[in-house]
Image 1 (cartoon, protein in one colour):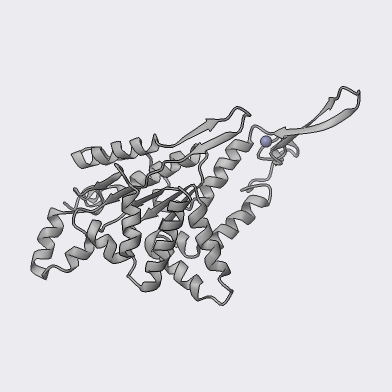
Image 2 (tube, protein in one colour):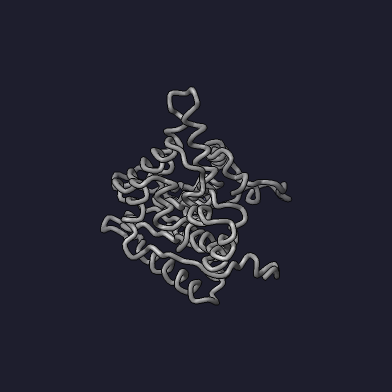
Length: 304
Ligand SMILES: [Zn+2]
């Protein structure tokens, strides 16, 4: 979808390097040296505050506790690592259009899904993340692949009747991912075509599978995987295996997948394989919506 996805591993490495090197995003030189040099003057960007305390035997010990900025910085890191496409950086629930019935239904279902997640504080004070046990999918009523198989004359008419583009599926799911990141979840956003290309390239690299494993690991271990436009990539047997591997591994680890597609139940299976599609859709429970409606991207430009 954007250049941001050209090399997922490279981007991650780059982000990690940026996060580790201090100070972050420092451009302006401070006017007076000292407190302004750091993003957080309290801990000097170490994210820990040290303090001395006398113990019962009268000796002075040094202790450390997390600085108040730590949570904010952790949020920033999670946000950067999530790889949200640039054009959706501003997408949120508030600026999602809710005019048509299908938009309202999509919106409500996304909010209901968000409620499946929570962060619970345990007795010992540690925080436990509770994930939804269901996947969440917004798919088409009449898939792209099905449209392509129609005679040319019929295609335009059916396409208009069953429009599936620009109805805000990605917008809503990115809004969801941002809320989850804020709440402390690790979210990874991937865009189907670029992500699958990346995996195939990694598979062909002569590095004993190192790059491929790293990519797979990030997709499998993220708390929530947001898969934009799944089933858009051109089918291949190698891709079918990869789809199944990721979807099945996440299922086994009880980690949800949030996805949207321009394919329908049937054509999605043609594009990602029957086993992968049945696992993916089968885990949705009540959170699978076949949706279509007016193209708001065209509307905005005044083309309709
Ligand atoms: Zn601090």
